Image 1 (tube, one colour):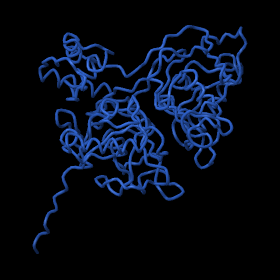
Image 2 (image 1 turned 180 degrees about the vertical axis):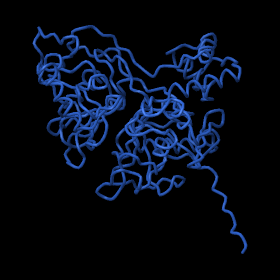
Image 3 (image 1 turned 135 degrees about the vertical axis):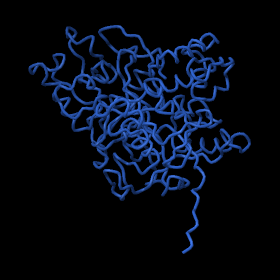
Length: 482
């Protein structure tokens, strides 16, 4: 999470307080009664670890989530029917809106094939014959002594494998929750359901339902490209508003043209690249400082470090398309659409441009940046790019931190699902062990619950982790006698 002592040098037209935003909590009568009981027991909304109203009281009661090791208060005794009513309400209210389907249809499809078990701590997936951990961001709460895990719960691939191993070694080898065969979700190298294939024949892109995470997204949750498992966030971050903890497009082509365009993550501070046919967000900017008398003062922010003027709304496209087709309801879009949208901004208002400005542009990354942790324009700490300067120098975030707090969203029987990228490993089958070699040297698989995109990522990047353990082997029926 970001420091409250930030943006001291950003020039804005109106004062703005920093508010860390998460997902809103359901307000049904049943959930409200449980919340009031938690408050009466001494739990506090936004309180310290161990005394948090949601994470240390509501979630353990409603979903059977494990309390923090620092929990010092006794959970209130809640009648089972009230718990069941609240759980049902949370599952329904957190279902992302799907314009093409009715709410009841979406909800019934979303949890199809998934059954909460062990007091809501695991989820049996009858399609894959695996048991998922219901907590989709457990590392943010339990590191099992593994170093290299960020406060948000994200980590690089090496830390992810160490964390899973520590889960299995927990409790003298009995394993976390009594299971010692936890593993990362698997992804096959070739998947006919994917819409694209790479230079080495590997499958990637959208509609990849053959992987474990892809099956969860496309089949169990019944989501479709570019649906996010978690609704777009509204928030205030310093003088900015509506920042999304996801990837944002830049104007700069990647060093390898096949990798598309440079992108920047406001979830972790990592600068990388994405193929143009992906759905990322856009933060428009203008080079230099606007005239003092400009009427856009309250809607723009000048960064004297990068010497650019930012639009204060970090997700304007979700509300204003300027007539451009192809912009998703949450404001994300592919790179070609991003270019069209910027051009439309400059032609808006009868040619006077949005807010009276006609020099809006996508941010650039420029020449190879020696401040990047990896070569070229890739990695953490890339402060020479406009977005990197904003993330590290103005918002004063560190590698692995997010511009907003991690989501606390419930999706079916899962909770704390992050609308971002999750690690996966390569294997031929869902229940197979992870292979030691990834899809390419220095890369491993990932899947986005932000839009359904499956691809590969540098193992040094920081992504989230959710796990499962294989169910019992299917019973092999003996052939009938002739």
